[in-house]
Amino acid sequence: MTQDDETLEAFFAAAGREEVAPSPALIAAVLADAAAVTSAREAHRSRRAAARWRGWVPATAALAASALLGFWIGVAGEGAQVSLFAETTAGEAEDPVGGFFDLASAEN
Amino acid sequence: MTRGVAASAAPSDGELVARYAAGDQAAARALTERHVPRLYALARRMLGDAAEAEDVTQEAMLRLWRIAPEWEARAAVGTWLYRVASNLCLDRLRARRRLSDAPVPERADESPGALGRLEADDRAAALHAALAALPERQRLAIVLRHFEELSNPEIAAALDLSVEAVESLLARGRRGLVAALAGRREALGFGEA
Image (spheres, rainbow over the protein chains, first blue to last red):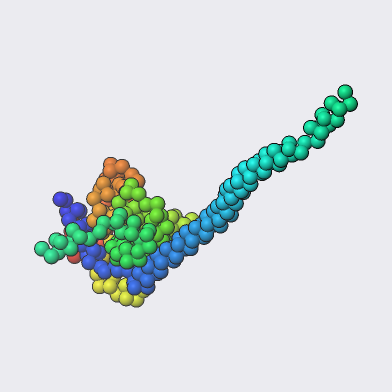
């Protein structure tokens, strides 16, 4: 180590003994920033969750309504078909064509 | 032995950042206690002004709080903070230079208490004056090496430079300090060369 180096080290040693400490106010300000950033982040998360929820509720309701409607159409449609078949069967028993046929045969 | 257990049980910086990101304010306190003193000392020695050093320290920590949820273990938290604080200091020094041609203050602090301490230690005061006269990046490298006791690779990571560039900065900085202090050796009790 040269004499210059030794002298410089003595200067650094002298300056290194100085106390350079942050004030309690600085520590408090840094911690307040940390809390504020956390609060802002949580508020942002809540808003996003609420927005997602607002989107899901109508979508789910629409899906459920569609499913119910489909189910109802399925059940009611099947019933209607049975009913129509039943009416046709009943109508055939009193079919006027039968009577017409009979009339025509009588004319001949 | 108890100290060893306590040291091994202490969470890493990365763990503390993850805990803070999950909302743990105790983790924020631990990070603050661990890093704020070093950041403040760096800024104070770079800027020579307590209020500006506080602003830089607070801003560096604020950036850590904001980036915490996206933090990845790309770099050590301490190195990342040194980099942010160093850049903030350099920005302020450049802004000072743009705003005024006046020389940078030679005293580290103008408050009466600090002034008294500096007057009581002429060597420290002389070193601060010599440091203030160095180019900013040389000053930064010298402060990180000789006051914050970072290794050259750590300084390189903090300043985003190669180790060779850091060695060059340190060598030039030391030569500048020696030249600036040469005339005061005898007055400060070192005798003639």
